Image (tube, rainbow, N blue to C red; front, side, top):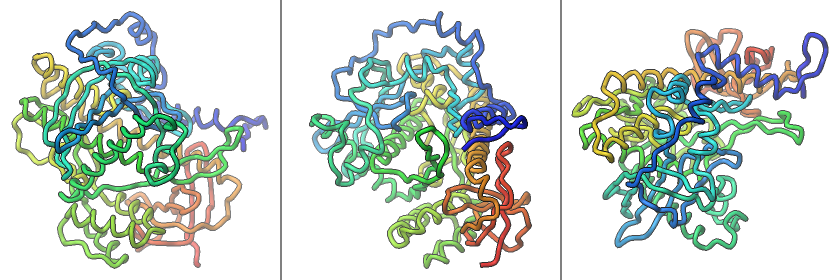
Length: 493
């Protein structure tokens, strides 16, 4: 599948998508390349050896990530203790490799996040760092900020410590290989013959399930949302667009990272440090969420209640497996928007994460990919080294605001490019009918999401009375690759 330019010459659709992506990024305030001063800073900067680092390279650390990922932020290790499991999560050391206010730091602060699109990956950090020097690649000795969590069988974190250390990733594992094995399938090739790592992953899985059970018990709803993925042929051209749901291996990473982020937020609070919190308010359209739940035979209380929502979502997955994806997407669309906010030391202002049912949550586990995590890592370094907070409240607030803005912009770019990829894929299917569900209703229009392929577009004719979660049949009337628009009209069934 190719696009045809005005001169009639065929062009590779991958090149077109990358060009569209770069244009969309620039329009949203992102840089798409690193300047010469950033490159020079990488060459000139040397990280001083910190004699306080613990040497934990002898432990059997491992990571779980996507097959093609090289910007590895986390490694994990677990061991049984008397009555609990100690889980250690090593987070890539980035702060010391990107000195505050230096060229690399300023470049990272401009984008604040890596952007993953159908047109390519645009890294927050130069890949010489994020995919090499600061990446926890298998077989490599790297610096890390380690969080050690003592997890009880009831899923409570009995104690938490944070300290820098040397680590060595024994093996980069993948979600697609490890997940089926944890669900009872055969041992994957990447774990074959390594009884130590097999036992490690299973123990991590156990601790993660304890943590999840406790989070569910306190009311954590969570949204097990599928991710859209392009399927390409042997030549790299898009041949389908599908969704993939989280595997058991993905749940390990999610549960452990949530626990680390909570522990870090609580540690900073206990040490009297202002910080940045990840906040999700109660859903603003709870009444509509209740109406949707009623359609599926459930009742939600009148006021937002994370425990009730979580129970409904889990019940929907169990009782309506064929519709679970649609239900989760609809509920997510109606939920409150996440943001980063300044948490002033000693403040008792509310600012929790509704779907996780926690009042203390930050982002600290992906510093190769998110700038907030780099700022939080600097605060942890200050605590460990006995220094004053490196960022005052005004600076933290500025970071929080910038990261909120650019995370939203990154999501917009990712959606736009995904729509361009979808328009490219569906360009020869204008006039075809599809089954869809309403995914958004705003003053600007009504959006629908197709069941297959997994794409979203806008109704070009106003359809009064429609709301999120309603089913309808639509016809594709236009596919504009350049701007990423798919236009549909409602048709009678």
